[in-house]
Length: 70
Image: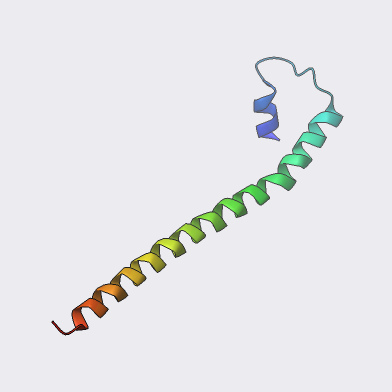
Protein backbone atom coordinates (compact mmCIF):
# COMPACT_ATOMS: atom_id res chain seq x y z
CA UNK A 1 0.00 0.00 0.00
CA UNK A 2 2.99 2.29 0.56
CA UNK A 3 3.87 2.10 -3.13
CA UNK A 4 0.39 3.21 -4.15
CA UNK A 5 0.44 6.04 -1.61
CA UNK A 6 3.81 7.13 -2.98
CA UNK A 7 2.60 7.00 -6.58
CA UNK A 8 -0.47 9.09 -5.85
CA UNK A 9 1.38 11.68 -3.78
CA UNK A 10 0.16 10.74 -0.32
CA UNK A 11 1.06 12.15 2.39
CA UNK A 12 2.15 15.36 0.60
CA UNK A 13 -1.30 16.05 -0.80
CA UNK A 14 -4.67 14.53 -0.19
CA UNK A 15 -5.37 11.77 -2.68
CA UNK A 16 -8.23 12.45 -5.07
CA UNK A 17 -8.52 8.76 -5.87
CA UNK A 18 -11.25 6.66 -4.35
CA UNK A 19 -10.46 3.76 -2.06
CA UNK A 20 -11.93 1.37 -4.63
CA UNK A 21 -9.40 2.46 -7.26
CA UNK A 22 -6.55 2.21 -4.75
CA UNK A 23 -7.64 -1.32 -3.86
CA UNK A 24 -7.79 -2.26 -7.53
CA UNK A 25 -4.34 -0.78 -8.17
CA UNK A 26 -2.90 -2.62 -5.17
CA UNK A 27 -4.43 -5.90 -6.37
CA UNK A 28 -3.01 -5.39 -9.87
CA UNK A 29 0.46 -4.68 -8.50
CA UNK A 30 0.44 -7.73 -6.21
CA UNK A 31 -0.65 -9.98 -9.09
CA UNK A 32 1.52 -8.60 -11.89
CA UNK A 33 4.77 -7.81 -10.06
CA UNK A 34 5.74 -11.44 -9.33
CA UNK A 35 5.25 -12.30 -13.00
CA UNK A 36 7.71 -9.67 -14.15
CA UNK A 37 10.32 -10.56 -11.52
CA UNK A 38 10.17 -14.28 -12.30
CA UNK A 39 10.46 -13.47 -16.03
CA UNK A 40 13.57 -11.36 -15.38
CA UNK A 41 15.04 -14.11 -13.21
CA UNK A 42 14.50 -16.70 -15.93
CA UNK A 43 16.02 -14.35 -18.52
CA UNK A 44 19.11 -14.01 -16.32
CA UNK A 45 19.48 -17.77 -15.98
CA UNK A 46 19.03 -18.15 -19.73
CA UNK A 47 21.80 -15.66 -20.43
CA UNK A 48 24.15 -17.39 -17.99
CA UNK A 49 23.39 -20.75 -19.59
CA UNK A 50 24.12 -19.36 -23.05
CA UNK A 51 27.42 -17.85 -21.92
CA UNK A 52 28.50 -21.08 -20.24
CA UNK A 53 27.59 -23.23 -23.24
CA UNK A 54 29.53 -20.93 -25.59
CA UNK A 55 32.53 -21.08 -23.26
CA UNK A 56 32.38 -24.88 -23.10
CA UNK A 57 32.12 -25.14 -26.89
CA UNK A 58 35.12 -22.83 -27.31
CA UNK A 59 37.15 -24.92 -24.84
CA UNK A 60 36.12 -28.12 -26.64
CA UNK A 61 37.25 -26.73 -29.98
CA UNK A 62 40.59 -25.65 -28.51
CA UNK A 63 41.19 -29.11 -27.06
CA UNK A 64 40.36 -30.73 -30.42
CA UNK A 65 42.84 -28.43 -32.19
CA UNK A 66 45.53 -29.34 -29.67
CA UNK A 67 44.99 -33.04 -30.34
CA UNK A 68 45.38 -32.68 -34.12
CA UNK A 69 48.58 -34.06 -35.58
CA UNK A 70 50.82 -31.36 -36.92
